[in-house]
Amino acid sequence: MIETEISRAITQEYFKKLTEHLENDAVIVGGGPAGITAGYYLAKAGIKTIMLERKLSIGGGIWGGAAGFNVIVTQDNEIPGEFQITSQKKGKLYLYDSIEFASALTYRAKQAGLEIFNLTDVEDVIIKSVAVEGVVVNHSAITSAKLHVDPFCISSKYVIDSSGHPAEVVHMLLKRKPELLPKGIQEGFMNVKKAEAGVVEKTGEIFPGLYIAGMSVCAVYGLPRMGPIFGGMLKSGKKVAQMIIEQLEK
Ligand SMILES: Cc1cc2nc3c(=O)[nH]c(=O)nc-3n(C[C@H](O)[C@H](O)[C@H](O)COP(=O)(O)OP(=O)(O)OC[C@H]3O[C@@H](n4cnc5c(N)ncnc54)[C@H](O)[C@@H]3O)c2cc1C
View 1 (cartoon, rainbow, N blue to C red):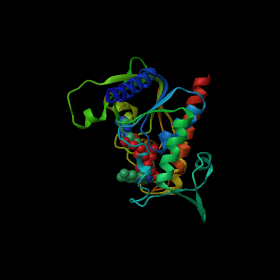
View 2 (view 1 turned 90 degrees about the vertical axis):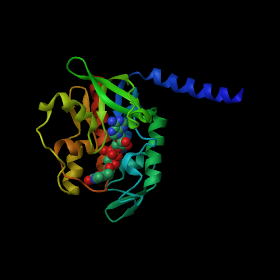
View 3 (view 1 turned 45 degrees about the vertical axis):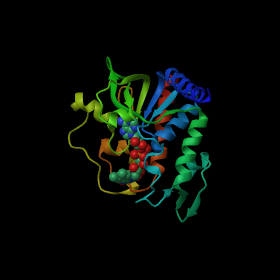
View 4 (view 1 turned 135 degrees about the vertical axis):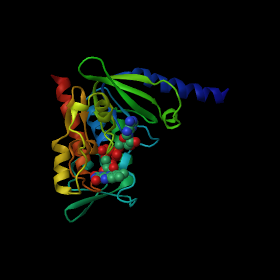
């Protein structure tokens, strides 16, 4: 019966890729520009990597540009050029269509070998001794309905918090390790130049096994906001990937 053949094909394929990725080299939490870029470079280097995104669509804050005006801006074109995204130069800025931007990043990352699980909500981390060793996840439909249903676990040598402003994975740690960061840190006022440089500079390991990238970095270190400019997100994603590749090569 064709109906059940379709269902069998879908469920078998999904659970095949899920079981193949219960153990990983890198798990990326959050599919915004920083997470996707990290995933692209990690997968391209042959690192076994998955990206977990609680929403249906991948792209995080890309789709809406600024205030829903679907145009993306960066100050240099190196990474978008590598993703072959159509750009337009206006003075010192490069402009892109946000729909093409989100789609191209996702497409190229997937083609590079990144495995992506959408509708997957990361709700905790696994720490058995000294380092983050994986994540505890649930289906987004279950968490959004607040159902009393147990999660399942995915292990990884490295976890990247690219969950954006909420820095959700860092906060999961803070609940039990409040000494990790000084209290009351929050993003500073808008300052494009400082924030774009700072987000890349501060991208890195915050706890053994846990790296931060993208707007999580601003939230964690109290860096200024940078407004709707995305170059720092991409560079931060690339940097975190390079750092993890170096660690794995050691
Ligand atoms: C209120 C607000 C203020 C903003 N201010 C700025 C700003 O000052 N500067 C700036 O550059 N941009 C700003 N933006 C725009 C935009 O969010 C970011 O620039 C950019 O998208 C951040 O990229 P990112 O990759 O760090 O994270 P995001 O694009 O935010 O992507 C994070 C992704 O992680 C997913 N996620 C989060 N937690 C989990 C979890 N537990 N499990 C699974 N998935 C998870 C989210 O669904 C999301 O798709 C703002 C957006 C908002 C809504």
